Image (tube, rainbow, N blue to C red; front, top):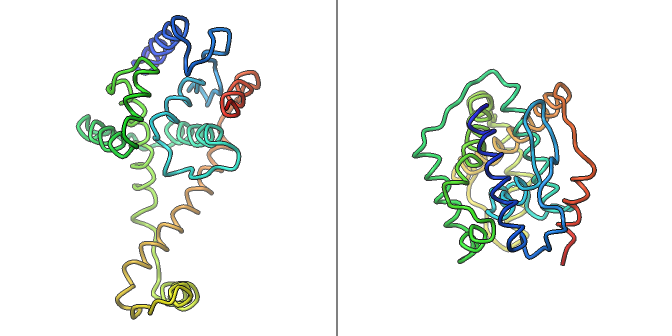
Length: 230
């Protein structure tokens, strides 16, 4: 049995014990504690996974104000992540110090006390979050290797964006646009990011058509109740 699977079983037992004694998120023990929310090929996604990712803001920057609910949006992100990790040929490893640094920086960006309250509520230590940060870093490294170096922005695209989007937006705010040569680097980076985002969306959609994805309705209902609770 893999380390990650052992970790998940241990984590599930730990959460179950803490809930039975005190109640997770203030819920009575009769409420759903954890369940198998989805399976991506042979990779499980549990309700506890989504709650942890939400509590520590691992996907705050990626989902923004998700119309279908934060945790539903996180679930979709995690399904896509696991599809990529499972189906791509690259075998990427992230040095442990880099994973630890990502965890420290992410927790430091949270509003004061949020991380400490969440750790106490879930009965976790900071190191228990490392596998989640490691998977996210591996995912982004795969994306970078596949798309960042091959995505090109032409001078014509930059000039068109400058003329049709960049300058009008600044003028509307009463600001004078910088000359196109001064704004070139900023616009190139923005356009490249947009191109990569579209390419990744298309690529992941194709991978998803090849994957075996199961979402379990009973656990999904528990997720919806969690999101809608006052």
